[in-house]
Length: 312
Ligand code: CP
Image 1 (tube, rainbow, N blue to C red):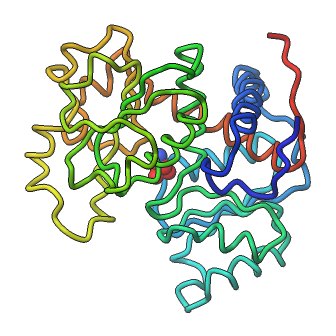
Image 2 (image 1 turned 45 degrees about the vertical axis):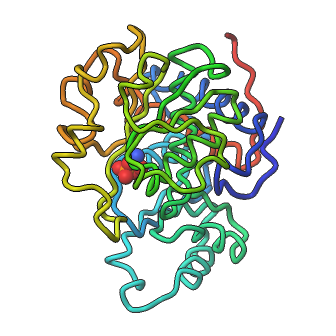
């Protein structure tokens, strides 16, 4: 099977088969990490341009590493040092990057839908690395990969997503991806941080972690997106942390094998306590490692590569 798409814009538009293809392809990509030479010539001669209009550590570095491990050339554009500050539009910037020879544009943008608009103006592949409050598809895919790797399946698992659902593109990509893969999704947070139309996504809503924790196989803890909040949606960070911060007290009734996830960046002591973040059930750093494998799979498949036969 091949991924018959030019772009990766979101998990809402992917089928279960397409998601499975990406997750399956990420397995042999991850196996490369144990080799002395962690590089293959698959994308030799291709150019990946990484265009971020927002800060990033994990996504930016892992796309660059993923491209390099596939032998592509990479260019990083920091918008603060580019002609964007002189007023160049997003579309003109993208057309310029394409004219310079890009095969892929990996874009992060504060406006929801920016990668979708871009994809209509350029013939190279566009990969959404996070658009506003909409989607973060490669984060969703690496979360699915990590859950499947740790639990052996996704179908039938009960996955809780805790915190600022309203402003979270990670939450949306996770919900769409998890539902397509057959998981039951629970969202937990203050009513002001849960979208009014959440029922349309067929998730269960809870307002207290303690009311649902005993049911969950996986808990994915979100950062409070203060940069996206236009009004005060909870009294203070201290109060938020008291009620929704995940600590061992709130996990008292959790399953022993509860998988604890966080997409990063973490605010220790706010949405997650340091000891929970560093506990044996935490998979936070493995998520980061898996991000490289998943992004390698996405680049490989969008370049026209097909299913890879593995010995396992
Ligand atoms: N999870 C995530 O998108 O992290 P960065 O903002 O560091 O890329």
